[in-house]
Structures are given as C-alpha cells and as structure tokens.
Image 1 (cartoon, helix red, strand yellow):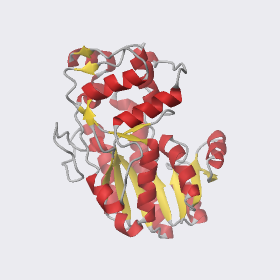
Image 2: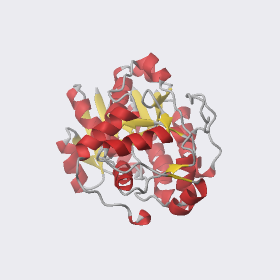
Image 3: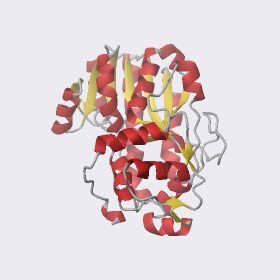
Image 4: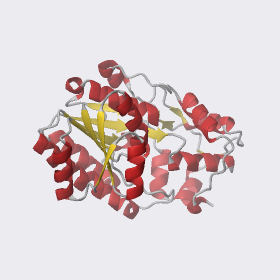
Length: 318
C-alpha cells in the first residue's frame, strides 16, 4: 500500500515511519522544513515539503503521491506546561483547516482509507468507570475544534477511521521528558489522593495500532478506536512507579488548588480529570496487542532509554 503520512516527523510519525517501511508499504512523508525533510528521508519515507494549512499545496502533493491511504497525525501542541486557550490556536487551525484540506485532497484521489488521530480527552471523564468509544463527548469549549475535526472526518464520504489516543509516551517526547525532569526534582506531585486514572500508550504501540488499521482497511473503515494500553491506572500508582524506575524521590501529594497555582487552570483540568480508556474494541476487531501493555513496561523502557541523561526543566515550572 502507498501511504501518505502528514505529521511524519512528529512524535508518533517518527515511531510510525520505520515499521511502515518494514511492513512493505511505500511511504510518502509530509514535512515543513528542510531539516524535517531530511529526517523523514532517514526514517524511510519519500519526503515532500508542504503545510496542511495550504489548500492548493495539499491538493497538488496528494495528487502527485497518489496514495492508497492517508494518515493524518499533524498537531501543533504547545511545548509548555502552563498554558492558556490562546496557546492552542495553531493546533485548532491544524485540526480543522488542515484536516479539511487533507480530506478534500483525499477525496480527489479516492483513497482506500483515511486515518485520523484524535485524543481520548474529547470524551467526558467517567471517573473510575471504563471509557469506551461510545462515551459522551465533552462540551468543554477548549476542545471545540477537536470535536469539529472529528465531525468532519465522520461526515466525509471517504472510508475513514478515527483513533482516540491516550497520553503518548516515549523517551523522545517533550512532554515525557518534562515528566522525567519534574520527577527527578520532586516537582511532579500526586494531586489530592491520586484517584484520577491515567491512560497511556507507548509511541511504538500507537504506531502498531495504525499499522493494524492499514492492514485491515475494510474492518477499520467507519470505526472509532481507543488506542491505549491494557491497564490504565490511578495517578497514585503510576507516578511512584515512574519515580522508582528513574531513581527519583517518591512524589508528594498536594491539594488541587496548589497544583492549579503551579500550572494554571487549563493544565490542571487535564491533570485532574480521570480517564480510564478501554482498548477492548481495537483488540477484538483488529487484533491489537500492545508491546508495552501497562504503565510499568512503558516507564521501565523510558527510564532505561534516558538513563542518566540530564533533561532541562521547562521555564514555566522552574
């Protein structure tokens, strides 16, 4: 299959390109800068330069590539921890305008499958209850454009599949590295009693889930899948285990109001929400079996890869 990957050099794109190539797919990777073009080439893709916000460029590049499938992984997530809604404006544009442009280009060439990344937190927290793909979506205005993106994909006449990803974990992710740096400095506390569930997915497993969708396009088309490991767990279990693997001090507990002062209300809402996502549907329909089935394997791998390497802490947490 010929696969056009938008967001080819992001965290998930970097994990996806080599196994796509190894599985025998011809990969076209979209990148925006000369440096990222070189990286996409090194990862096994035929690199093309363009921006998903450029309507005509997307039509031309997709027409030239003639892909059988398009995988849209483009995001513009702000690399800071103390965030406000304005910081997400570019990501919102990418989600809505960029996805609109890719869907239109995909429709012109008639792809067999359009794979779209979304996020588990578009659904309302179910507390300690399991969250499946039918869980009600959140009315939060912060996620309005991500919801619009999901609606655009599902309304398309193309065969599409939407996957809602848990928190993406890998040693070369900025957010995972910030967690490492904060844990080492005793600055990633457990909020309240730590009862909120964390849903995680290693980048290698998220890539494997996409490969499973591409391998069974007819089964994947029209579906929404949660992409998450087998065992979401409470914060009070995950953070101490991660600290232990990193040989960091045991995390302290702090009340929610102190966390809100430290990182701001938007980040606090994400940290305090409980997401216990279920991967039952994708395991049953596509045979997905994560290599890192729980937070324990994921954090052990991250700690081993990072080793003793020093990681700088974001300025907004210093």
